[in-house]
Length: 140
Image (cartoon, rainbow, N blue to C red; front, side, top):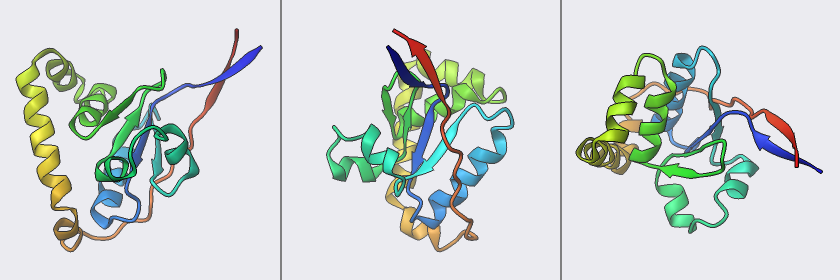
């Protein structure tokens, strides 16, 4: 029997939010080796991968689904993103190792997420960023 698994993590972001679209475009620009899929909340895979999460929580922050299917939200998603980028891998490693750094990242993320509307009014608009996931077939 063959099972489909992700070959790279997926970043899910609010593609109706102007600020979030801009940030997703920046993440994409820094992901030169395409180590990340990027999909908006409007993509059907968003509901599929986060089906067990209450809708209010699902829409409150970005999420990264890793290749094992684990969901990392808000500041924890930032730590995953830092770990994937060669330029910020060290900061990601530090955040995973030191709880106070993780808590600070989460606090700062929450502050920005709570101001999305205000920040959206201050940034140039960007087209939604989409990098489709790739799948690997495994023999079970």
